[in-house]
Length: 190
Image (cartoon, rainbow, N blue to C red; front, side):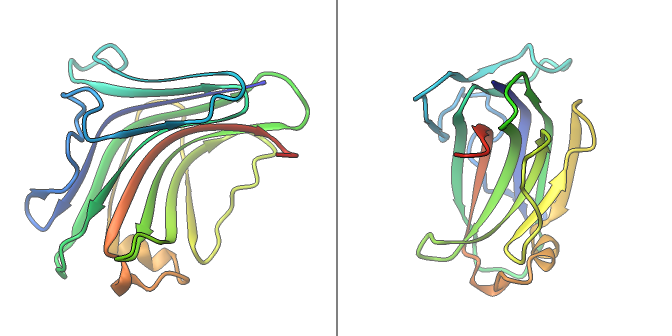
């Protein structure tokens, strides 16, 4: 059995000096503008907003999955055609834990999927906390940033700079970004 907890304070995806692209990235309006997706064939899951997850008084989102499969929230953002920097910034607490079973693994991830204009995935950046046996690794289309702790951490980077870590992604074709917050657990066999 595995447990995955994902907590997030807020998302910011800002063009240049101030145009915010993520709608309700601070979760002040609960999960409006966010799609909730889950596979509940086994285990339990939650995706909820509250002010009690972080010491500040702002809203945070909590995504939880226990046992196999996943629970996630996501939002797709169209990128304006611009050469201006696009800053991604968030505060996240990612935690995954294996409880029992030799073939199980889990991960908690904040993923940025880079999409072309047709909405097809070209690659992704994953900020992740994973358990042993989890086989996520860097590829030309996938950049893994391992969470440095299971506490609250701040992550900030320029999207165009981050795409340099993905040689398999043609950066000029990136037209959209899908932000996903996911708790995922499975067995090695499936």
